[in-house]
Length: 98
Image 1: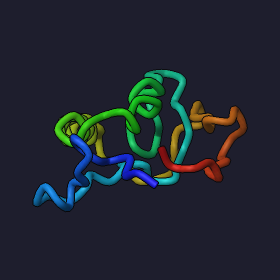
Image 2: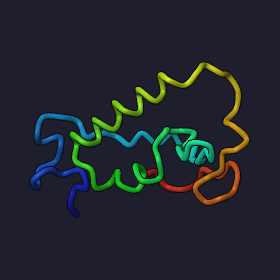
Image 3: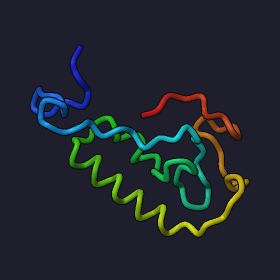
Image 4: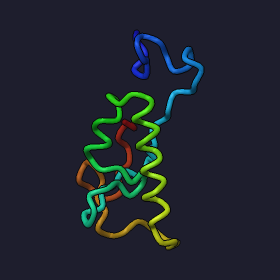
């Protein structure tokens, strides 16, 4: 079986770096107001494309997600009521982590 994170046939480990883990937090709900996941802050397009990104693109996306996180005001409590899961039902985070 081939490594989905391989670069030019070599895994990130063999290139001297750790593979970039998915930013999925398991809180898979798309917030209708901005189209981003309430858990990881990715758009549906970013979630769908994760598997095809190389390590550099994944790191760049993680940096962008950190910028997004810093722009969110601190507000303890649950996710907005406008959030829906990727399956369309509230609070269902049983899907796999892309």
